Length: 216
Image (cartoon, rainbow, N blue to C red; front, side, top):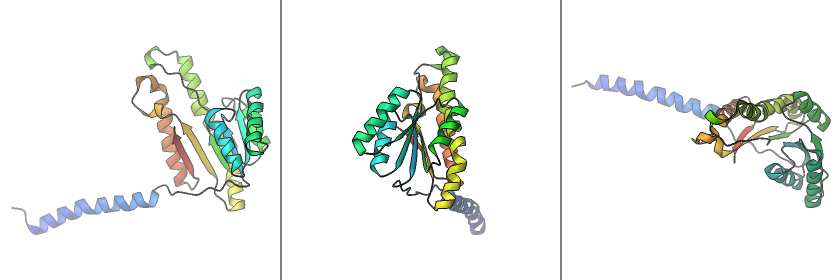
């Protein structure tokens, strides 16, 4: 029969690491941050339709200065008019392909320093990887992954400077489809991208830049 002293030591060996793990989890947990929108600059990709346009209207209605980015000029113009009719706010629109870093950098530069960046662009071709053309896979990765890197790289330096100057938090939201996170064969090419963004979001939160990975 084990002695009480041995049982006590065994208990300590189990409890102390668990306690330290709980403390560490508490210290590095993402902390909710309220990001004000009124009078601040919100830039949204994929802002000419769907969720992006809805977010643009909501942001404008909350008093933000809104910039939307998409590829098609005609749809951007229609979106600007839609936002104006809904909120009375004149949004800025920039035509750029997120796969082209120089085009993204130019659009962000023309838009001006960003307070809230919403990476809402994305494409998805539902097909099993074994029968999908590599060009289709490459296109999704270039838009969904590299496009987001391009956007954040172009906007981040000015965002951090502006946050330091104003004392107000900057924020980045990365949008994703819920389909890319479940075990469906047709979503295989998008799953590594979603997992990467989720991990990256946690890293950015730990570096004091509020980052949200939103799956819709």
